[in-house]
Image (cartoon, rainbow, N blue to C red; front, side, top):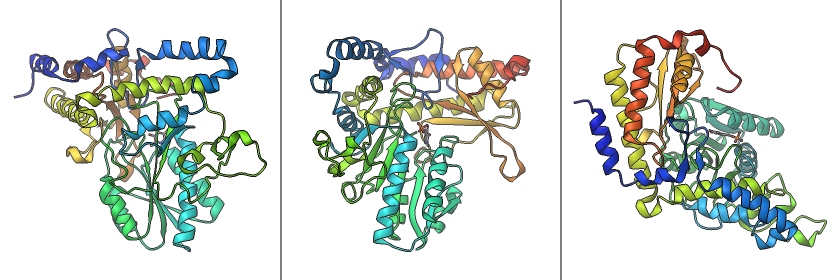
Length: 427
Ligand SMILES: *Cc1c(COP(=O)(O)O)cnc(C)c1O
């Protein structure tokens, strides 16, 4: 039996995580299924940022580097993030953007590979990886005379040859929501002497991650998606303690120096992850990210990432079931793998035409998801309607209502209106 609205309300009433939603300011009447792209505003963030501006900056002035603890914010926030990704205190820092952190760790990984396994010429990644990851990789390959080999997910195992220096993957695919088995892929790579770099942009705060038990080498991730850090929030970088002290990262700067206030002309990298900092950090943005991290850590007493994951799967299972039962016959497909172990916290529907306009019509009704253009592989062009399920603030009734809106948009052909078919700069 397909669940009813009543069933969904009953599940919300029994949901042990439901009060976590009170941590956020969400506009009235909005069902926000885009926390995988930009997380929502924590209630504490406006006051925290205002305090950082008016009291810490306005009154404390330069003294706030010490008195307000500005200087070690990257490490303190890194320690909070560590709890969400299976890392120890002192192993991660919040800093810079995902793109910049990726450049640092890829570069360090290639340096280590050149020393430990010289002569390997390949950097392997997935063709459907997020473009910035591929652009960073291709830039480094050009610089170093290496070759970037792009494969499909099912070709990864066979691509792990003795010519490969580094394997760089995004744990959860940004378009389809497909998730790699981090532990198995890392073990397969390491058995062939290949270093692994993982992008956790769609994993940190969304799915349980255990970097140390998976024995991964390097990881980066995003602050403004599931971590609710705000637009352009600082990202994070983690390096296995096995490697952290072995190499300079390429953006050697004074914040990564062992003694930045000695102001010596020679560079002495700080021990551990601190050397992955470059220059002065955006304190106001770090203050907002701190609030976002606290919203995810608030789930710790309620079962932490395991409880969030269980609810996220329940929400996305419900969405798939309701779409298949209530929107049948409207040309929708499912791009996200069904097995739980193979997907993250988003569901991607496909359609050959109208995907962009359907998403726009849903947004006009207050159901916010997003659109990603298909790759047209094998002659079949399938665009993607992407819906993120963030268990901190989405409930079962929200899922019901979202599918009801989708059904109405499709049945009435509402998406065919001209105003829903004009593309904007940011999709
Ligand atoms: C969102 C995302 C990024 C974003 O990188 P920025 O430097 O913040 O623009 C990078 N990689 C992946 C896989 C992403 O999903």
